[in-house]
Length: 326
Image 1: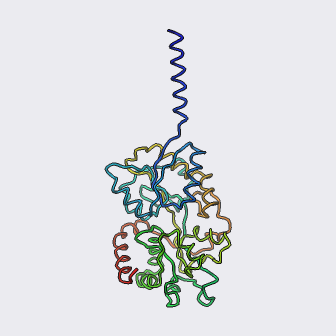
Image 2: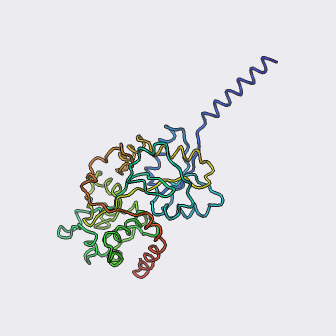
């Protein structure tokens, strides 16, 4: 009996050891680009033994899916979508203070129930082979000139979180006539299928100028394309995109562990090196080859304002787009 009991105990111990070694699982909804997803999924498996199952959607579609599933959540984490979208839907998010919250720069601590993930900035990517030197844009208003008709590449503000922020950037830069300026911009837009496609289209000569995020543009500069980055003189919004725990997440502890890992110095430095985004940590790396933030005119961005006006702003966008046949 003693030998049998010992054997059973050993088998149970082995079983517990094997169970403990099994990878944890987290389900995330994300607007990240495919190459970043692949790299991060592999790193999560190697560094924290986490199996990341992901669904890739546009930012607005991520939130639509989360709200549709609110009674029976399927995802644990919303990973890298626009802060405005998260702020507008904060009631579907679970508050969480990450493990190294004291290492996050105060300027990025702006969300209600969501956390900063990476620092992003709105810029122009300009094809220097196609854009005439005398028309090289310096301001948002420069892109309203008739010469830029169908030559300004952008995603739709009702489909892309980053494009919504870019629309808001114009409204903040022109507080008295922002909608008039944006409508003139919209007249010149060549609409891309996604925000990630904007810099590629400009790099490939499908447009003269793209309105995009700094990190997306810089990849093509680093790749040797005929493009350069321009920071609009009226000011560029610099703000975080977000990561959040879904309210009622079925694997909440794993979701928290994934968020903690995303905000570690090693992961943030990896994102700087691979995405050229700015770290949200006070001890994070500076993206190599990019202008220091202190040299760029930046504009304050009120996420609550952007979120509370989201429905009205999207309706104005869709009405204008329909009027212009976009």
